Image (cartoon, rainbow, N blue to C red; front, side):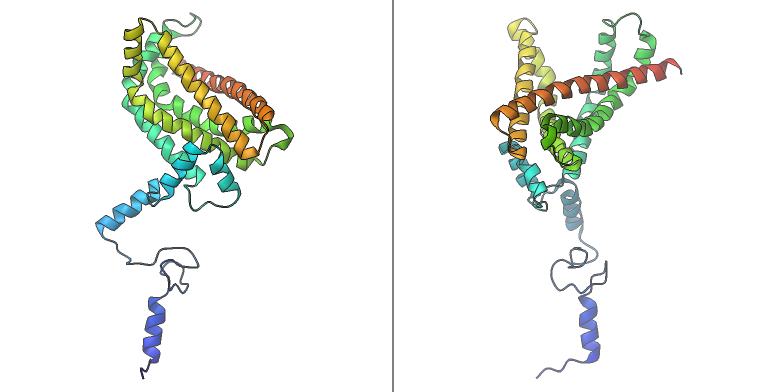
Length: 276
């Protein structure tokens, strides 16, 4: 018969305490704070795996999130609303990671963006100070997309509320819905951005005009509106007619507010450059 001394019992109890909160933690995770119970100093491989999982959720949440995002528009919002959240990437984390990736990709072609900005200035009205606009170009190429993107997610939540009318849910739920819709747009941006310039040149060469480029952009816009309609229909259980009306209202309002926000950011940047 084994005899357990007080010292042994104390030692065993000490070993099973969570180093983070002090609660008794006999399993793989602490029941008090949720911290994983394992060696305090991980190996380099474990540390890198933890870092990647913390940022990109590579432990299964990422593929589950992407699968629902692409195959069932609006389902992620339902999952969040009904409390099934740990199996997917949290909305705000998804938004931050995708935003960072988009800004990184935009930064790769910052010089080309400035050249395009300077070329566009030649078509602007003479009332706009050209020299100030040229000085504002680099800052705009670096920050305008960030400012507009940050602004359009809450704007999308407001637009969804206006489109849903009296059936609109709380703002936070609409904000989550807006994040999920914008997440799909940002993923498509990451896929198409590296090949968009070569694709435009190829289409212009094959057709001899820019018509095919505008047609391709129109197809993408139609796909985005279709996705929005499917997401609104599923997330808010709308009828077909109500879905079409809500999508049309949301699409028109969103596009108008997007260009208004972009125009405001551009004018503020030019104004600041003019007074320097």
